[in-house]
Amino acid sequence: MSAFLVRRLLTLAATLLAASLVIFVVVEVLPGDPARTILGPEADPEAVAALRVRLGLERPPAARYLAWVGGLLGGEFGVSYTYHVPIGGLLAERLAITLPLAAVAMALTTAIALSAGVYAAARRGSAGDVAVMALTQLGIAVPGFWFAILLILLFAVELGWFPAGGFAGWDAGIGAALRSLVLPAIALALVQAAILARVTRSAVIEVLDEDFMRTARAKGLSRRAALWRHGLRNALVAVVTVMGLQFANLTAGAVVLENVFALPGLGRLAFQAISQRDLQLVRDVVLLFAVVVVAVNFLVDLLYAVIDPRVKLSA
Image (cartoon, rainbow, N blue to C red; front, side, top):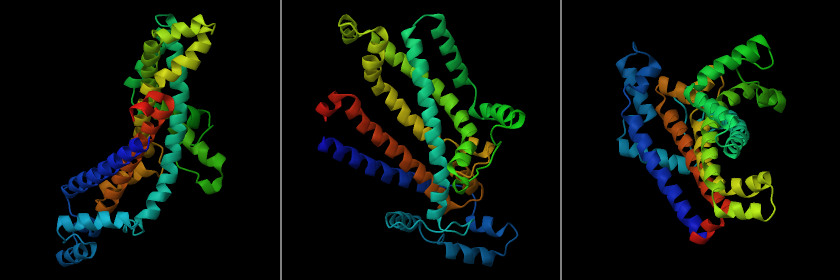
């Protein structure tokens, strides 16, 4: 098991190093001049040149990359060109909104998808199975921002149960803060739940045809007990893989919905940083997204060993 962990940690480090290089190269080729964007199109060329020197934009790309990575390893994220505040504090403030949003959406996704997927698999070919598959197809086809608009119209405008946008802040209390995240979390969860429900159904159907399921029934277990106790656990390897990818998507893919609900999260920060050509902030935000994706997939690898003992033996 220790060798398994070492290999995964080395892979994680190599992936993050490669991601940082790709992010830096892509950001460098973006059109536009950050100094010109900050000072405006009518700014004096000498002032623009002086600002470029102050921001370190005149140094060679290799030197800027090494300085950026070295600063990250030392905990120094630099200062945002646009907000004029340390980027580390800015990322922590926005991450405190995006991560809870992704966690609530993932909890809703898991509850809906596992229930619907197992229900459809247990009733394969029935009217209930067809209905679940039709709803999941609809959930995949309809974009999340359209769900978000419908949720705002119904629960915020008509019923007034939840705020239409904005974030109350954690200082206002956990209840008020979570209330601000309910509608965005539902809008995020609906599409992901539709995908995960179909994956769960396929994985459970495959397990139901295995010999050990017939053996469990022959020993006296009810169909429901055999399905939830043995069938679902053996199907979870495929399901957990998709769940890991989905959590990463919920974290990094909330750019549109955070703008729809005016949530000051990482997605909205990334959008604003790109539009304002804040290169330092863009690099750090995108790399943070990459860290979340890699870390989640690392945890998924560890979960394999918990769910399936054969992973431990192969490791």
